[in-house]
Length: 127
Image (cartoon, rainbow, N blue to C red; front, side, top):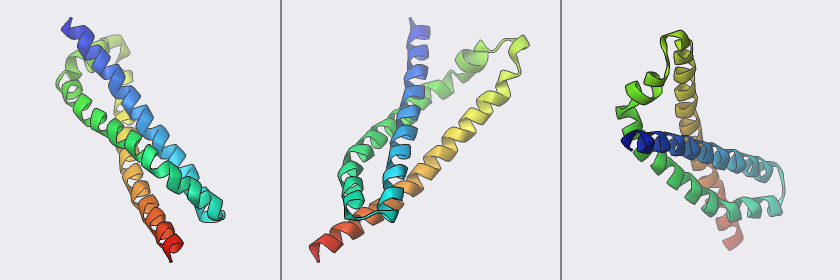
């Protein structure tokens, strides 16, 4: 039963990572449109920002919390699933984790820029 829970956690951890990346991709597209477009594109960004931020926050929380048991069982359930004749998968696992860390860092930077743009556009509307 514990193995099933660990495997389910690992799958949900991957899903949370995908949700985080998807929210960032949508935010990036809206941000680019807001930078080059008119007031309607800025409003679209402002309207989407709270919902996308909520999705991203919860996904990041799950990535962190779900990552704890995943890290603790990594040798038995991730690397343990790799048989000696499948050792070529180890670099792929490393690349996957490098990508995931880079995506989180890029997402944090993106969110800071978007937040600044949303605050600036709200101030412009108030003026």
